[in-house]
Image (tube, rainbow, N blue to C red; front, top):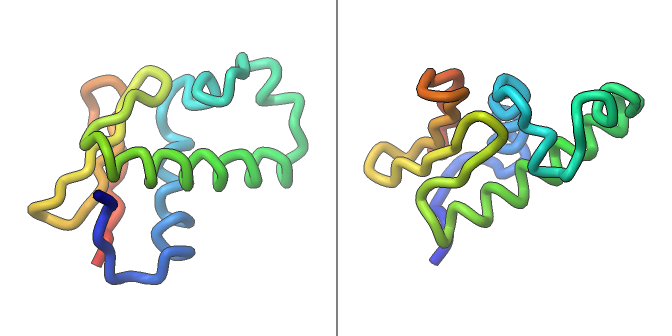
Length: 97
């Protein structure tokens, strides 16, 4: 199916990365533990986060909710946004248009 968006994809991913970073344990989706994540160089972390954001974005095209660490990401198609939650707390909204 896919997610419809009107903004530049690179801008969406940049905002999405910032939101994903706010989720406790997001690196678990990369099969990493906290010490593995912190051992990476900042450039490696950025690359991993961008890849993760891409994977989640495309996964949301098939399922409206994906678990990420201790939280989740939800595609709110009616409002054209992605909602990033850490547990039950909304930590970021990524606008698609």
